[in-house]
Amino acid sequence: MKLKWFISLMIIAQFSGCGVYETQVNDSIEVNNQDIENRVNSLEEEVDLIKQELNQMILKNNELESLIAKGDSETEVKLHNAENAKEDFKSSFELLRKGDYVSAEISFRDYIKDFPTGTYTDDAKFWLAESLFAQNKHREALIIFNQIIDEYPDSEKMMESILKSGFSHQELGNLSTAEAIFQRVIREYPNSSASSLAEERLSKINQ
Image: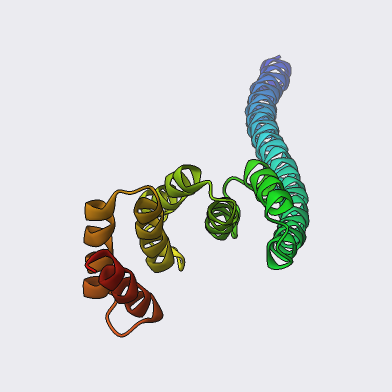
C-alpha cells in the first residue's frame, strides 16, 4: 500500500516538474520572440532612415544636375552674346573708319543699347562720341566723353576721353574749362601723345 502511494506521488511530482519546465520554455521563447521583434523594429527604422537619406541624396543630385545644365546653357548664351558683341563692334567701327559718321553713330548707339555691360561698351561709347564730334555735335560728344570719365575709371580710353572733353569744351567756347583740362592731361599723362596734343591746344588758346 505504501509502495503504491509512493509511486503515485512520484508520478505526480514528475508531471508537476514537466509543467514548470514547460512554463520556463514558454517564457524563454516569449523573451526570444520579443528580442527578435525588437531587432526587426530597429532594422525597419534603420531601413526607413536609409531610405530618407537616399531620397535626399537623389533630390540633391537632381538639383545639382539641374544647376549644371542651367550653367551650361547660360555659358553658351554668354559666349554667343560675346561673339555677337564683338562682331557688332567691328561693324560699327568699320563704318567710323570709312568716314560714315552718321551710320557709325546709329550703329554704336544700337551696340550700347544691346550690350550695356559688354566688354567693348566703354570703347563703343568713346567711338560714339568721336562720331558725334566729327559731325560737329560737340555738346553731345562732351556728354559721352564725361560718361566714360565718370563711369569707367579703369578704361583704356580714359586719357583720350579727358583730352577729347577738352576739345569739346574748346569748340563750345568754354576756353577756361578747356585750358584746365589740357593742363590736367599734361600733368597726369606726361610724355604721351595726349599730352603733346594738349600742349598744342593750350598754345592756341594762349595766342
